[in-house]
Picture 1 (cartoon, rainbow, N blue to C red):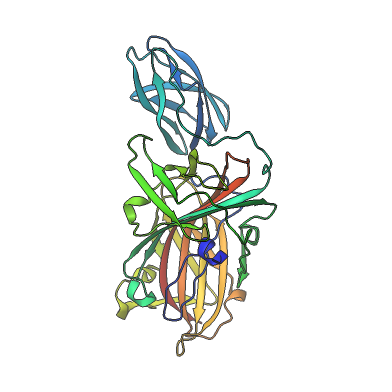
Picture 2 (picture 1 turned 120 degrees about the horizontal axis):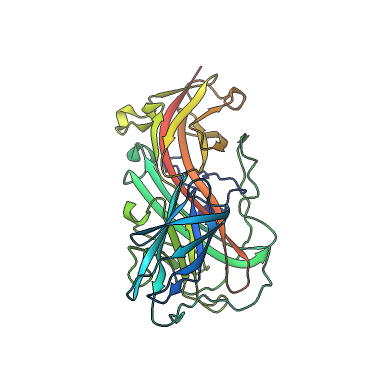
Amino acid sequence: MSVAVLVLVGCGSSGLVERPPVHDSGDTAAAAVGITSIDPAWSLPDEETAVTITGWGFSGAVTVEFGRSEVSASVVDAQTLVVTAPAAGVETTVDVTVKTDAGEATLPSGFTWAAEEPDDTGDTGDTGNTSGAGKTGGLLQFTLLQIACPSCLGYTGSLQVSAQAALHEPTAKSWVEWLPSTGTCVENPAPTAAAAAYLDAGDQMWLEYGPEDHPEVSVALDAGADGLFAADGLDAEDFVRTAGYRVEVEGGADVPAFTVENAFYTPDSIQSLTPVELLYTEPRQAFAAQIKKSRADFTWSSTGGTADFAVIVDVYNPSSGAFLGEVLCYEADTGSLRVPAAYLGYPTGSLLVVGLYRYGVAEFERPDDASSVETVVTFGVLGTGTLAN
């Protein structure tokens, strides 16, 4: 199984080859605000309790909600809050939500009031082994792709949701180290694999959103013969936007079972995209967007916090359909991007497949050896156009 399966988003068939979504390896989260832990996560029902919340994006005016009870927060730094959990008066468990000027994040079932400390029955898989610390031990990709003209590109529907993952021996390489820095463009990027063989981590992996006992979404990934996990038959409801997902691994001969809460966060959608012709859905209207060599401008608006953004232009011969080349540009999610003319020296009239992606790159720790599993989470739009002078 090649690296392309893991780090590329497809552009279709009929001679249109698969191309990658892009992401900044310096990014730390797909959402503007996130919660990673609450300590302590419980209290006696009739007591107020000082609680430390860790995560990111804690700046400006910050409030915290324990269920429906709102409390003020003391901001220690952008990753740390100190709050006082109120007395509930009864034994119960509630979600905990952090609200800031940049957005909000919720940790489902984040705090419990009980007569005694709840047992931690979750199997995190922590072995105390740190041999993989500072190295890469896997890759997980979760993608929602909105396709303007499915029949033009060989798709069966206008929305494609996919999930793939693999765990491997820790390595000093990164799955995304081949990418140039944010704010630049590159021609014909060449993805490189961080590993060529995958470990036995069992037959299934799950990506779940919502309470652990009754998740709202549970995406099951099945392992192939080579250890690569993939999910089939996913739909738009499986990709909850601006949400934290936990990862659960069944465990196998090489990697024991483990669970990691809030392992990755999903971005929200792309809106108000121009050129609007990129979004035409009828085959007779395909390739109507005129992308000028001198002013290849793309604009958009986004919701749900910040992310990084990429424009990927694949170029094809209009007569034979032969692939001519690719231009990849990425930047912060500022709402506009221009592909420099120097990267569009292809024949006028060339057919274009244009991908626009909101994406986040992060990582979570594998409890069995402390290596990092890199996560690439993407919301993309795929349209068509024609290269003009």
